[in-house]
Amino acid sequence: MDIIQFQKFLDRKLLSETTQRHYLFYFAKLIPKIDKKGEITQKIINEFLSKHPHRLARATLKNYLESIEREKDFRIPKITATTKKKISHTLSPQEINEIGSKLYEINEMYFLIFELSLSCALRRQEVLNIQRKDIEGIGDDKMAITITHAKGNRDRKVFVKRPIAEMLIYWMAKKDISYDNDYLFPSPKRENQPIDKTGWNKALAKASDGKVHPHMLRHTKSNEWFDKGLNIVRIQQRLGHANIDTTRLYINPDAKKELEKWSNEK
Image 1 (cartoon, rainbow, N blue to C red):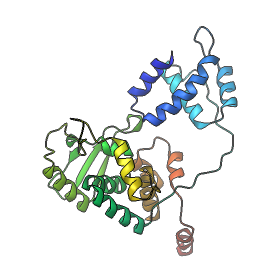
Image 2: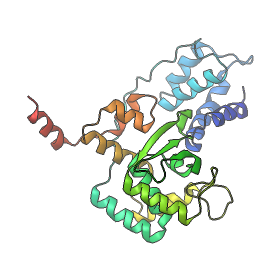
Image 3: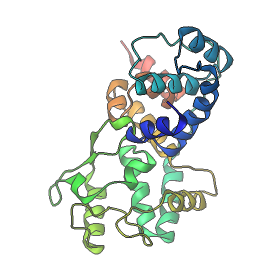
Image 4: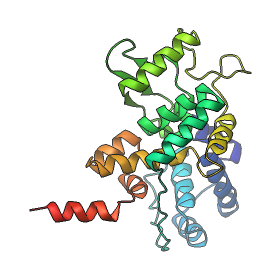
């Protein structure tokens, strides 16, 4: 398998451009290690991870073996190198209000993307790819959205609270978003396409003085759910994570709140 074939495999999994770029970077380093017959061995795997002890290198190997249908033939060692855990940065209620107000001044659409992303802890491309056919319960008290372009092809359903649902209903009527294949946030320049991620990135950066990126909204909501007592397994399901260890990286418990919980325990 060459790099073009591997990229086509990654495309079919609907992985983000950034993730694909990381995997292709490590795949390019793996190719010279594979013998002339195109065969991979356990020794090659072990030596590759020894030289590149990174979770992305390990994920690249897993995807490569899956692409050639040999994932059950080899053992992929766990990464043993210790790395400092990253603290998940979150937004305060005051910051959320300030950023939301500034986004509304820039463009109403960016404000809605912000509110929906934060409320449902959606990934950037998930919220941008929402189409009219994905939305249920319009006109009812509850609105549900099926995320069909989720990472790793793991579709899931999220529920939208009433205030935001009402704003979205008004938005769809205003923009005449009525056909199944209409995007909730259509591009002003490209027909039948969603708004480009670059425009959303720039708007959010402008509203936050460059301090906030879209993924911070997922971290913020994850911690809010955790602080309210939501079980981490349910948080994992809401975020659409395949591995609960990934969910744990999103949680940064507030020390004072944790102390209060322990103090109240009987």
